[in-house]
Length: 611
Ligand SMILES: *[C@@H]1O[C@H](CO)[C@@H](O)[C@H](O)[C@H]1NC(C)=O
Ligand SMILES: *[C@@H]1O[C@H](CO)[C@@H](O)[C@H](O)[C@H]1NC(C)=O
Ligand SMILES: *[C@@H]1O[C@H](CO)[C@@H](O)[C@H](O)[C@H]1NC(C)=O
Ligand SMILES: *[C@@H]1O[C@H](CO)[C@@H](O)[C@H](O)[C@H]1NC(C)=O
Ligand SMILES: *[C@@H]1O[C@H](CO)[C@@H](O)[C@H](O)[C@H]1NC(C)=O
Ligand SMILES: *[C@@H]1O[C@H](CO)[C@@H](O)[C@H](O)[C@H]1NC(C)=O
Ligand SMILES: *[C@@H]1O[C@H](CO)[C@@H](O)[C@H](O)[C@H]1NC(C)=O
Ligand SMILES: *[C@@H]1O[C@H](CO)[C@@H](O)[C@H](O)[C@H]1NC(C)=O
Ligand SMILES: *[C@@H]1O[C@H](CO)[C@@H](O)[C@H](O)[C@H]1NC(C)=O
Image (cartoon, rainbow, N blue to C red):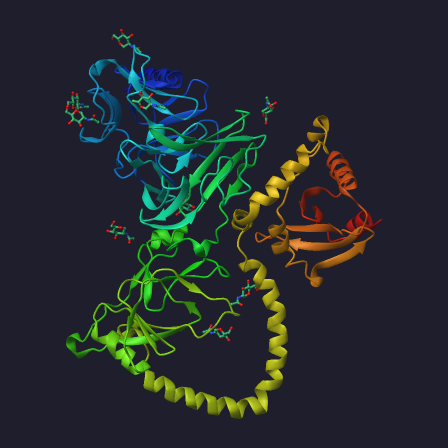
């Protein structure tokens, strides 16, 4: 092949690709004439949503999904073949077949279908709407859709869709979390409507409910007093002869909003902030460790450490890859199988203290802790026992919801976890050596250690303060907990007329939640005080990633009211200039008013702040 032919070939290829992409961009529907394969997509008329094959994260699996067309980070709102990925998008296809929308895999077998009965097979088409709804209907008919994706939600609840209970078929629609950020298969957490009292509930494994919104009282869900209709959202609960459902819409359609049943077992409402990304508007205020079985079997939850979940001694994550991604629901498995008397090996027990005692237990008769232990040993399925005030409790299933207890809580909760003998160091030897250690310690401490220890305690105490900051949950995780309040507050503040329309542009300064500031300043510790001005102290803060800031905490007695605060934010925001210390954020929460500035180590900052 000479270069000329090569060139011509490449030109043709280019033209082909160019035309091909053009065709893709034009289409908003899949019809008998137009199917999807490879990287082809369809885009809704207004360019809001896009549908095509995607692979989540680093996964090599391909799924048909719908995502926001305009955002650079792909946010999937719906997945067709959640449980049946295809491995090769190039030879797989989404097309109309026998009046249905069907995904064919690389060997041309149907792996997913809309499964509806329609009379005229050739005349159906599937249109992607700007609402994010994919609607299958007959081409020349305006009658109701044969099928629509809004009736088959995955984990996302979009404005205009509904999570309904069908009173005729007595079935619920529900949102189900993904298994992990790289696996859209249905996870363990789901949100659905409880028709008995019109409340929404979050279930674990579709059976155990651990959160409820409280019943709808005509205005709000009774346990979510803050989720009321406002200037942004219109919430509606509809109940008629056929169904009942909750739905919401945004008054200003340029606001992009979604709810998601997250893999963490939390339901979250997020808004897209241009240039910043997804921002939590609301999430149900549930502590992470209160999410049912968040750490799975034999995992224990502790909110004071990161990660929250760890495996009990003698156990390891069932799926290390999920665990690494931060999804723990799969829990932990034994490193060594229990022997239960086989080969003459007797299992042993590991004492675990300060742990809340997990769910399903049985009461047994036992006169002493030894008897209780023997009872457990005799039952091969017994996994743990506890002996409390003459009660012998045993567990015969996997342990769920283990939780580190707070220091001030009763510490008599002691669990004995059954493990293969090889997982536990020899009791006798360890107790003997413990005695030896105590003796040795006694001698040595008197002579050397005590003076050193006093110094060490002092030194470590200081170090801990520093470490604690690193250990804290990331800003985002902190925000999950109470962003509703702070976000709401700032919105109400901005809309209360304190900031006039034309001034709004001037304050593109981010709002920072108080929790983040508390974390950054170690609860406003004195060690972080840089100085104090007329309006109150100025603290140095440091975010987990290392960003340093100066925080001016306006004392409530300083006399600087809302008006002055507003003026200062506006003034400084307008003055943003590289020669001036820049305003990085602000915070208003309750009586707390704070301004976040760039942190500069030299004196120029001091003179600006206190001058
Ligand atoms: C599909 O093709 C048929 C004939 O090949 C044509 O009449 C029809 O208009 C086409 N439909 C679309 C949506 O392009
Ligand atoms: C994909 O894998 C690479 C390397 O293993 C890693 O750095 C990256 O964070 C992963 N991306 C996602 C989205 O998990
Ligand atoms: C797939 O199978 C159908 C019949 O089931 C056939 O009409 C079609 O041509 C096949 N497609 C490919 C790419 O082989
Ligand atoms: C479709 O039709 C078949 C037979 O006519 C029937 O058994 C099936 O239940 C129908 N499916 C739906 C979804 O209506
Ligand atoms: C969820 O429930 C099903 C039965 O409905 C059961 O087979 C399965 O093991 C449960 N999953 C977990 C993680 O417990
Ligand atoms: C309930 O369903 C029936 C039959 O599909 C329909 O005729 C009726 O209008 C529906 N009622 C409401 C309130 O939607
Ligand atoms: C809707 O929001 C956009 C951007 O947030 C704004 O530019 C527009 O004026 C708003 N429209 C209405 C009708 O409020
Ligand atoms: C359990 O809690 C008590 C009281 O806070 C504490 O003194 C003890 O060290 C804790 N034990 C363990 C093993 O963490
Ligand atoms: C432990 O302390 C926390 C806050 O310091 C408190 O909310 C909780 O009720 C206390 N628990 C007990 C058992 O005293």
